[in-house]
Image 1: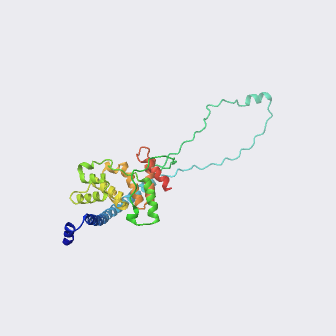
Image 2 (image 1 turned 120 degrees about the vertical axis):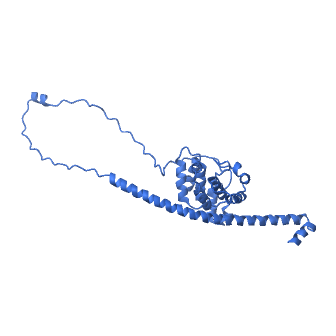
Length: 299
């Protein structure tokens, strides 16, 4: 290696030096990508174990609540008793008497005017389902995304499924930076600089180094999930989204939309459809038009 460097410094011309520099940059990029995949796999395994523990705890809590609800409703709801219908004996017909015209006038009941006239019953609209509402998808024209989705062929290999998913995501990749609700420039200046240049690999490596020196927090998880989303790693991004516990970020509408895109990347289309339905039915959600577009493309 020393002879090679000496040759480049003494005998090599400018073209050879430029070619050598390009080779070294390519090797550095390959090593960086290998390091990123190794770190992501290790982080995913750790978060997967944590997710399973939380999932088991949640299932146990739901089973307990279901048992309590069943006991409560079965105790309070009673079947209304129906009184028996008594049969009346047919009355024997009384002998008819011949009535005179004057008697008929006296005995004939007088017709009374109706007390009130009933108005025609109006149709009552059926309220929408609060969990999975249905609505008419109208044709809406919204701007196309500013950036394309990550290259799935580079990360997953060639295939019809990857190509079709890439075409779908290119139409739905409404992903922007900076992230809503975060002041990244103050806490992570180098990460912020790399993300503005769309260098997601360098930003993720910087975040990994920061996670080894400080306690994990919602901001760190959100930035890691965003970097993984922009590199096409949907399953790993979902693991970081699941770690966000704070009310400020957990209720962030932009995070909801990004999580739906991560579900599509992770081949979890039913879960993505359910989330897009909730977003599209919320009239105050800033990504409701994007969610309606997603539902139209997925149906």
